[in-house]
Image (tube, rainbow, N blue to C red):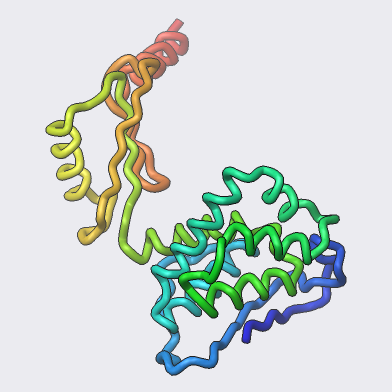
Length: 227
């Protein structure tokens, strides 16, 4: 079972009693899976990060990472297209029964992750944290991306780049210090005529600005300093 422990703190978001300021989530499952602690691919912070990490750990132990990821994607997709259901989840005054019903409808039946997914949402409900559903799902996806060693790369150009140019860029970035040697690059090309020319390359949280607009701005600043 999941359990949350911590010091006494402020009231829960749904107003159903007190919740710990720092929730430590340690869920165990009645399963034959290995009890060895799984390696967490990325350290996440915040309450949503801690819940996502606990879910990742539980899914890794039961070898249901892909299934749980599929469940959470289905929930995110359903809530993205149903503003009313998301409002119920994220409104503090909505009761837990309504929140549970919203999640059940978003899952659309028996979850692929079976007990892992079901028990996790039960934990969120018990702790008055179903309002974090979307944020936890996003944090879990971040963990899965790191687990697969995927790195998001956004290349912004003034005009759309052809496949040959993108492949050359992918090869160059893969060999650069910006990414790990075994990383899988997920490259997308964003078009923004405002950069005038050149490229802006975003790799994870790193940015390399090689745009003409950036060079013009630097030149303009230099000229102003010399006048």
